[in-house]
Image 1 (cartoon, helix red, strand yellow):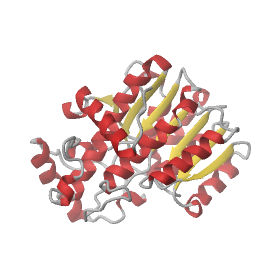
Image 2 (cartoon, helix red, strand yellow; image 1 turned 45 degrees about the vertical axis):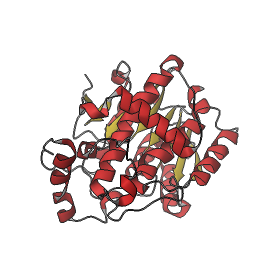
Image 3 (cartoon, one colour; image 1 turned 90 degrees about the vertical axis):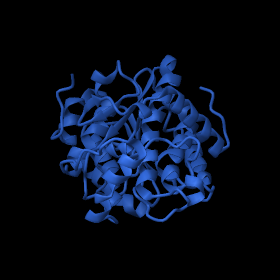
Length: 322
């Protein structure tokens, strides 16, 4: 069992697994300054990776992160890639840039961290997909699958980390109604629950499909962190609604609030999912406080994972047969 837990910091995690970082290439999405993705990239820089690829919407919001990485370790190569995950033309352009970059022969670890939470009004992306599902799952599905050959080139030992949340417990993947009956059945927390369940199911299906190629995938929950942009539009009354929505959707009690972490502690489970060899024999796992935890059955159902894959292919208009 991994010795790490709730209070483990990202600095402690990278120091423990320095040999899994040195000379390797990492891609992180959602790297705006002061967020979890930025914290992961900054922590990794301390242990001399060869290359850090930071994928985000707005370079100006990532420039402080690139500057901090340069100040920590000027020998680390960095590449910024613009990508709006809810715009599949933007995702395809980002993937093309990565695939055509000769300085990126392989990608050892992908950390799909970008996401949104509890969008209160029913909103569609430019393709007509509910926005949270698009931002938190479908965009990452497309980006990751388009660059999969660079990830496979790093195998065995390559990993894909799809950041989930305890919020998966708010509700399952709605395979027959992922767009909430065109908004008639919509609420923001149910949309978040669906997206976060999808992160776990996608990790399991990726691990199944890539087992023979030596690539593993994991779905970590960072913890409750209120200093990033993810929750800055929410107040206490918003969070008080979660229990009622979760019980309505799943028949299960929510279980009360989580203890609060700082950003460094929140990034640690993401880095554990990316680096810890104790997880090698449990690909597709859900990780909480740097430990493997068994989620609700609807988040581990192989049929739901296959259906999610097929629907995701339909939504992006491309099949992936690896």
